[in-house]
Image (cartoon, rainbow, N blue to C red):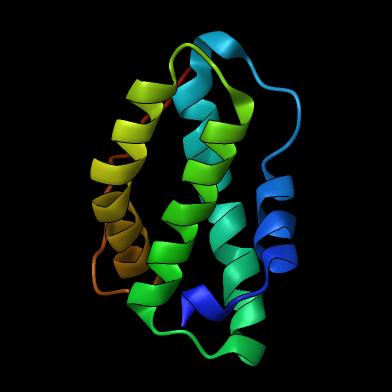
Length: 112
């Protein structure tokens, strides 16, 4: 199904990633944009009716396209991260969102 999505739609998702970024923290910046792309795809899902796997594949496709568009020296590492680390990270985000996984964080006090 993702192959039938218009190039304009894909380009609009890629454009969501445009913006100022700190080159020294590129991976962190990219990870921070994943929920934004996921949310846009979820909203578009009302029209496109994608499966969970199709949505995840689309997120990966959009981020890979953005990385290739930027033409950065760290592209090989960023593409590796996107193709191999990001898919299970997306699965974890979805599990947390659907309450199938709970992350317990200890609270702490900081006195300033």
